[in-house]
Structure formats: C-alpha cells, structure tokens
Image (cartoon, rainbow over all chains, first blue to last red; front, top):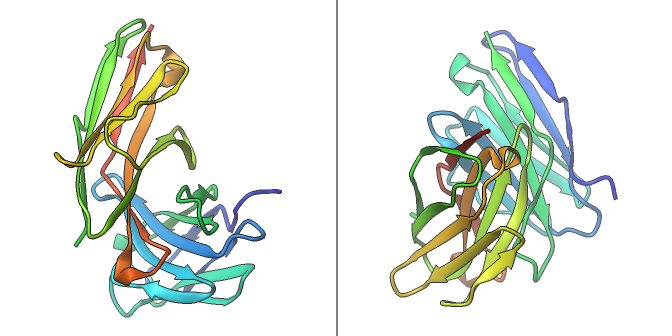
Length: 113
Length: 115
C-alpha cells in the first residue's frame, strides 16, 4: 500500500484565495483525521471522520474552513478565503477499527502571502 | 476539552546519554496513549500503551504508562544522532461513547543529540 497520500505537497497562495487540500487514506481504513501543525501550537486536530461521517469538528478554526469526505477513499479540506495566519503544514491521517495508531501522510505545506 | 502536555519542550544531549521524555494528560474516557517520532516529515508510530505499569520496549526505546497519575514517559538509552527528532505524545479518548476516539497530540519534545 502506498500509505496516506496528500496533495499538493506545497501550496503558495495569495490572501483571499480559495485553497483545497486533498487526502487519500489507506485502503480499508475507516477513520480519517485532518491536523494542522505550527511551531506555536503544535499538532492540532481540526476534524475527524468515521465511516465518512464527521464525528468531531470542534477544532475547525472558523467558518472559512470546511472538510468533506464524499467516499471512503477521498477527503478534502478547503479554506476560503485564505489568510496569512493559515500558513502551516496540514496533515491527513487514517486508521482502522481496533487499531488506535494513525498513519500520517507527508503533509501539505501551505503558505499564504 | 482533552489536553496533553509534554515536557521538556526541547532537550539537547550528547551521544550516549539517556533521556526521559514526559507526557501528562487529561482525557475524557481514556482509551490509549501513543508515542510518535517526527523527523523532517510525517510522524511515525512508536508505541501504544493501554495498561498501567507494563513497559513497552523497542531497542533502545521504552515507555510506560501510569493511569492513576495520568502520565507516561518515553526513555531513550545510549542516544544516537539519528534519535534527533520531535517526539509526540497522543491520547485516544472515547468521544461520545463511540468506538472510534479522537487522537489529541501534545506540543512535542524537540530532542537534539550531538555527536
């Protein structure tokens, strides 16, 4: 298995633009997490899904952030409009029932200028 | 709100030293505690702990959990430069009684091992 696949790996955008991050979880995994990592705040959980259903989105910073999981093999995290303070590395992770350890993708480094 | 606190935030040692990293937590319906190592890219899984007092060991790394005092430690003996990384502690809580709990991470400990 190729592991969790995220795209793009790097994204530089201008303030006010829409940004869409993509994630393909490991096949057969039924939980998916979106995290944001910064030096100041560490690894913050934004939202997680079980069986494609959002379970907890309390970490989503504000209405500018939205996440979807239309099927078991794909999820998106959208920021609209983007702001410089959204600059961070965004990780997607997945895992399967009965195994607490989550496997992480390589992350998307987002820079908003 | 679940909370995970790691200490120290950073640590600089020389090769051969032994280090102890700490993780304390407050979690609703605690299920497990996990340790990850993060080098330049994605965090990679090290250990999962669910029971108090039972040491998990992998080579020079070992970890133990105390569910009464709500903390865990990660020990690394005979450190090597390749151990330089961020070490992350995470807890799994059983949110809302579902089987699939959320993973909450601590800030991490930045370990630097000098030759």
